[in-house]
Amino acid sequence: MPGRNQWRLTDTSINDIKSGSASADLLFQNGFKVFGWDMIWYDNANDSTSASSVNDMVRKIERLLKKGKTVKKNHLVLLLHDWLFRKACSQCELKQLIEQLKTKGNYTFEHLSNYPG
Image (cartoon, rainbow, N blue to C red; front, side, top):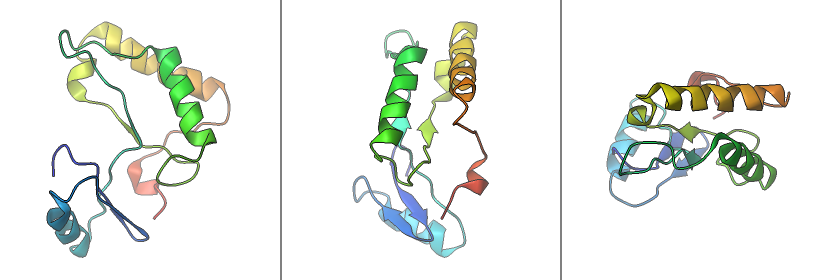
């Protein structure tokens, strides 16, 4: 299932492609929730820096939520690859993203265990 955007929640079953769906089903049948993502913070393959600026990411997040283009309305799962944040400058970008969204006043950050479904 690595690399698959699949969801298995009480009221949600989504597959990006068939590969891995049996594994996702088995995990869910054994009491696990399987989370995919609504958006990815991409990296530049050549140097592992972020491909989008913080301001671009904020705009993309706002647009997705406004248009209701997430799996659960008013909730967004953002996929962040760990290798993208090995450099201090990239870590600062993530911190800036969180701070900018929190400053807007209508965003909260929670653990996936609090995700609906």
